[in-house]
Amino acid sequence: MLTQLILNAFISASIYILIAVSFTIIFRVVRFFHFTHAVIFTAGAYFVFFLRMELSFPFLIAVPTAIFASALLGCLIELTIYRSLRAKSTPPLVMLLVSLGIYIVLQNIISIAFGDDTKIIRSNLITEGFNLFGARITFIQGLTICTTIILLLLLVLFLKITRTGKAIRAVSSDPELAAISGIESSRIIIWAFAIGSAICGLAGILLSFDVGMTPTMGLTALMMGLVVAIIGGLANVSGIVLGGLLLGLAQQLGIWKFGAEWQDAIAFGILLGFLIVKPQGILGKNTKKATI
Amino acid sequence: MLKIKKLETGYGEKQILFGLTLEIREGEIVALIGPNGAGKSTALKAACSLLPVWRGEIIFNDNIINNYTTAQKVAKGITLAPQASRVFGDMTVMENLEIAGFQLSRREFANRLTQIFEMFPLLKERIRQYAGKLSGGEQQMLSLARALVPNPKILMLDEPSLGLSPKLVNSIFNKIVDINIKTGVTILIVEQKVRKVLEICHRVYSLKLGKVSFEGTPKELVEDNLKLKNLFL
Ligand SMILES: Nc1ncnc2c1ncn2[C@@H]1O[C@H](COP(=O)(O)OP(=O)(O)O)[C@@H](O)[C@H]1O
Ligand SMILES: [Mg+2]
Picture (cartoon, rainbow over the protein chains, first blue to last red):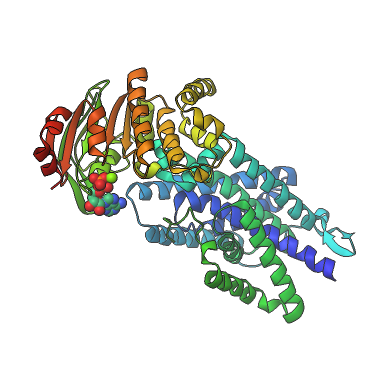
């Protein structure tokens, strides 16, 4: 029982962490609440559904293409809409509203194109399971955990080692100082959208393999991801990982003790607790200047 | 080399500079002094596109560069060491220098690094330390080094002596003169330590309420105490 609980916690934590990390990468360079991130999550899943179930592409082509398409979608939104608004120094609150607007439009497009019912991607790979220390885990759940671990390691290496990764950190931590170092922030922002949207799309794909997809799946997922990101101080990967594990465990414990309907209440209870007891977790020391 | 003509700018609706005009010639050290809040930092920020130019012109080697981005100005050879020795505190000294050399090729950066370490031997011993953990004087050195990494033609310094002990103030001023003589880089320096900066600069501008209130040689001010005092009233 306990192993199953911990395992389930890891599975949901993985998705939360992927969303939180990808949201944070973008948030820290654009400094507004990029709400459209939710629909990138959904779009990733539906891209795979479309390519796999309607065009019958093999998984090995459908999944990478869908990840690429998610990244492209994020970049397009940045290039066509956010960039020109930023040039006019649009306040963050207005940017949030614009982002919310794009979210609604895109979610409706998905809804019209595919319907509101739950779509499932069928495959043996997905439903087959195995036993792990007495707990049951499906192949896709195992893949979700492994992918998350590998992606996080790659991401940390990218941010630590590469020129672009360092530039992303620089723009995140002090945009003016980054600019006078010769970094063109608009280019770095595109990178952040590409990476963040790819990871977010992949998270959507992984979750949809496990539990299916609906056009509103991204919204719920982003809310949980945000709780994790905020617990993690909207800053570093390690804080987010801790936040994700904490939320995952608390939710599984809650489900076990009180029932599944308490999941959201637990998440927001934890968020509230953090806001009251450890508010510095919300705005990490380098995001002071950022508003919603 | 750098001319600022009738510059007007500010923050949001609030105008700070009202037609600022100054010129810095190649190889010079020019000081920009004046009371707190006169708009000295604002002038430097506008000069490197951290603030938009409302009216007026920024001219670099006879080209109007108003519309260049900050990064494009760095590529042209205009760099800034901002006020309060800003560094990336959550990154190591080495990472700070690498980011400062963002536009350089690997080879250029390696060469530049050797020269920088010759100028600032102390930094070499600190490369793995987090910049936020350095002392005030060390952070100021790093800030200066960062602005020098791209090999600028004109270096703008915003109160490099801020918050330093008198001994360190002397050493940073010596460093600045040294850099100017050895590398020939042109320097525009904003300073509150007026007596000190008058010792090292070739020419001086004083700002009051967003306009130039005095322009001349440091000698004129050193010899006329009353005139100097009036600039700060
Ligand atoms: N980010 C800002 N937003 C609004 N006003 C500012 C900002 N920075 C500076 N100011 C105002 O601009 C004026 C000039 O500031 P500054 O250029 O920093 O002066 P100095 O460097 O000469 O001391 C001051 O009145 C200051 O309050
Ligand atoms: Mg100032």
